Image 1 (spheres, rainbow, N blue to C red):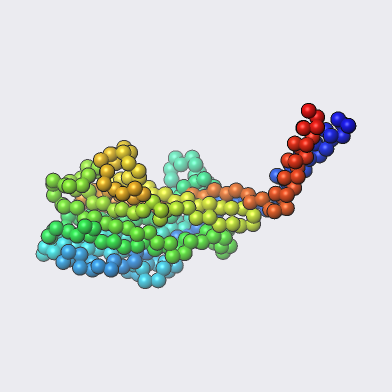
Image 2: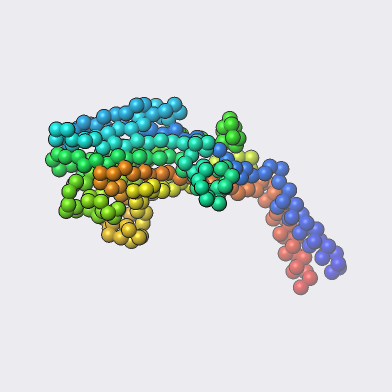
Length: 293
């Protein structure tokens, strides 16, 4: 009897192994994407008495009615304009390609676990003059159409996040010392963006029995400081940001960049039949062990 029970347990283990490893489909560990994004025109164009000038319409594929940039000035004569532009990328033209010395991405393919830049926000921050500025100066949405593909030609669409909006709030700080807000980049008075963490929550989609989870991040370029959480590095002193708020500091009278990044993970979703077989196999293993004892 002991031999029979042992054989039953081994057979159950073999069945469990077959359930675990005999999958018809294989996960995609390399994916492809395009991201088309634009600014929703700010609703308030008074801007403390100065105009807001809209740039060209956002490129094809971006949500309708969005623009690629806008600029603003103060009320004093010949006041210079500050501006903010937004640009989306495909996997072919992402700044994450061809980075010298990048051992993680040495094949220039967006592989599972790799964080790639999908959007760039570029600000030209000038010293503008006028009366005290509204707090905030403007609030608007960056609206994006993100599409993810299984093939490099980007014809096999397997996941999408269309009309994704991220509300950006901008604070134009006084252009001369003393400043009432922190200036952790070291400029006279850093200007500040804010956004909510929740707007960068992951998205998921299922393709051929596998669950793909896409995570988003924020990365500051040269001259930009991103503060997430409290009391981290140069962000010490940023105590007035409400919980769940991301703060981005940009130096006065300079140019700065901010990137949105994206990474994916993949895991198999067991089929209902596989779950049943797995359960029976585990029961068989437990029964064999218990009877041997």
